[in-house]
Each structure stands twice: as structure tokens, then as C-alpha cells.
Image (cartoon, rainbow over all chains, first blue to last red; front, side, top):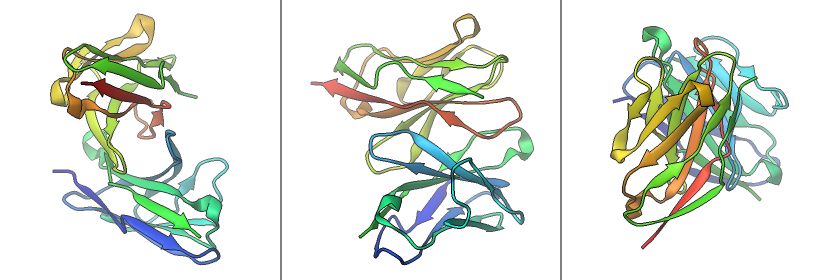
Amino acid sequence: GAVVSQHPSWVICKSGTSVKIECRSLDFQATTMFWYRQFPKQSLMLMATSNEGSKATYEQGVEKDKFLINHASLTLSTLTVTSAHPEDSSFYICSASYSAIGDYEQYFGPGTRLTVT
Amino acid sequence: AQSVTQLGSHVSVSEGALVLLRCNYSSSVPPYLFWYVQYPNQGLQLLLKYTTGATLVKGINGFEAEFKKSETSFHLTKPSAHMSDAAEYFCAVSDFGNEKLTFGTGTRLTIIP
């Protein structure tokens, strides 16, 4: 159980365009979803936390207008990278949790590799 | 703020040897502690976690970790390394009641045949 999927698994886009990444919890309702960014051979950096039906909370230094997060339902969150530039190329990973039972475990998706040319 | 230190960005062990990956955290109160494994181009898989109770935690794939409050440590061990253990390992911590995870910088484990 507790499977999280991401789509697409990899995407190449041209500089200046926008790209949307989906994160779905397949077999549970996620009260909270998280978006991380990982540079090559580095750790995960939390970008934002989102709860269904409310605005995402962004970490310091993350541009809200560039990385749009929508958590429309308890099973779906999307990250849109707007006006992408080569420096936005990275591995984006989402995770989901359901904390109603006090279990603060996050379940991670397989990641999306974004390349901006 | 929470911080996590993983000593050794690269660790190499021979197949069949003991695996020891170190993790220390900074927190004034006992946090929740996690070890995750990441294979190339994949997301993270939970190996084990400590929340409350027994300080020696057993996880998947033969790994275990011991929470030592006095040392603020949560080192990961496995008695006998297998080739399939080669991966990146991340230690993470969260405060009680807070889902937000703080990750260490990761340790790349290489297994020598």
C-alpha cells in the first residue's frame, strides 16, 4: 500500500515554456503533499508543502510565481514550472502523507527529471 | 532549526562485510528519525523509522538502526553487505507533530565484490 506516482517520469522542454508535473497518491488520501528538488548527487531540498484545498506553503528562497503548486484533491497535487530556464533543470520528487492516524511517514514518488534546453 | 549530519559522503565496503552509515542530528527534544534509500533515477524508499518505543529499530532488507539520545545519533547498520545494497542513503529527521522532513546530505554506498 501507500503508493505515490508521478507523471511524467521525464520531460524535456524549451526555455520559456511551462511544464506541469503531477503527483498522485494511488491507494490513500493524502492530507499533505510535499515537493522536493534534488540536484545531481545532492540531497533533497524541500520546496513547498501543500494541503488539499489550501494554498501551498513555500520554503524560503523558493519563487512562488515560478513554481506553482495546486493541491486540488486528496489524491492529486501538481507542480507547474513556469517560464522554465536551464537552471530549473533538476530532479523533482513529490511525497504524500496522511497524518490523521499520527503516522508522519512520507511516501515518495519515483521522481520527474526535467531538462530545459 | 533541525539539522542532520551524515558523516562520509562515500562509503565502500566489501560484499559480506558490515555496513555502518552514520547519522547525527541536532534537536533539543527527541525527534522522529528516518533512513531512506534511493536507487539511481528513482524516488526514496523508507528503510526504517524511529518514533517512540524501542530504540533499536529493524527495517527492510536486513538493515537496522539504533537511536542513542545521549549521542544524538541514529546510525544505520547491516551485518553483511550485498551487492544490491549499493545506493544512496539519506538520514532524515522531523519534529514531533511536524511532518516536515530535514534530510542529511546523503551517503553513497559502494559494495566491492
